[in-house]
Image (cartoon, rainbow, N blue to C red; front, side, top):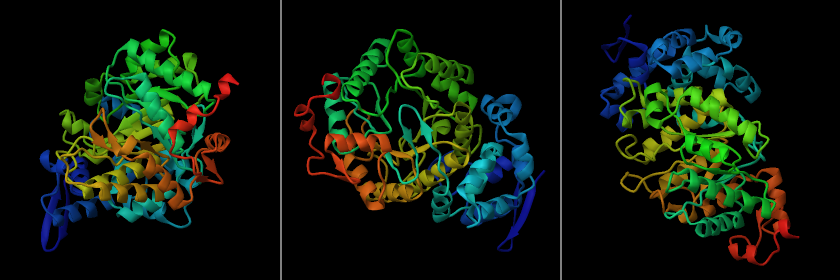
Length: 461
């Protein structure tokens, strides 16, 4: 059925909820490129007005990709807590927004209803929010997870050391790890993007990082970000992995391009539970970002934000330890400039937490996007206020293997000090034992990786 509204003396008609969702989105180059975006600000406002009056029930009953045609839709809908859904399905999107932003609604209230939400509901309410709304609502929600250590606790901000090396040199990777640790980074994970995605290389990097963690008694976890099937084969051959990583998407067809499905991820989760080197219970690590489906011609005419929300709904099935959002990584064909990257990052962080995921953020950019370091720093400060679980730690902000810009170890330390946040408790104690941190602040020896050559590792004492 068509939905019609009159605005500024003109009638606007929309022919599907998919169209309403797309045209209610804030402007993004990817949606414009796909020819699904609003053609004017007036049409965008009209779509938001119609969207505000839709009920959550209507959104559930009209997924942007039909249940019969898409595994992601089925995973989300089949996993819904029907009792919770029934208690909120009558609400309009506008009423849902008001409830989320109410001072009387606590984080525990929001977490309680997250299991009754579909991705389309989550995307819809985010489209009616300003940037400050997205920060405020997200700041209420804490999603705490545990692998070897626990992240996401109130008052904490964690970091992934990303010690990539263009030749996968163990010596170079460990040098970068020691630098990151010396700045207080690394409590989320030591996670390597390998240049060579082979079983043998994955085994080498997993074992080297795990042995280093054990030698220095570091309360953290390791991961090598090769394809999940490569990691599975490595673990079957005895590799020491704390969790499995995989990029996932919001449509079945895009997941097929990524080489994954629900059954493969089910098998991976079962394997890491049996053979992994962490008790968990959270043992998966996902990477996401607006634009993946569009760039791989797997968007089915749906807008990037809604597809990203569907990615989170799919990932919820696996109770991940970490979700890393990298909106901005693809380039200007999906997010054109700093304003669009900041907006997408705030949307994604809020949507992921609302659906129940532990969101880490990487408001990163490639060098051909109209964005600069100030845009990125604005994004990370806003997202830290919003309660992001963790960020990346990249030497000098410049990843020498992936050729893009992300947050540096210096950024990490500054964000903690600026907002009075601490590392994960177990990791902070280790930093204090190493002399790197005292009373929540870095000491004079912080930032000097040579300290590892001056101390006998606990594993050798």
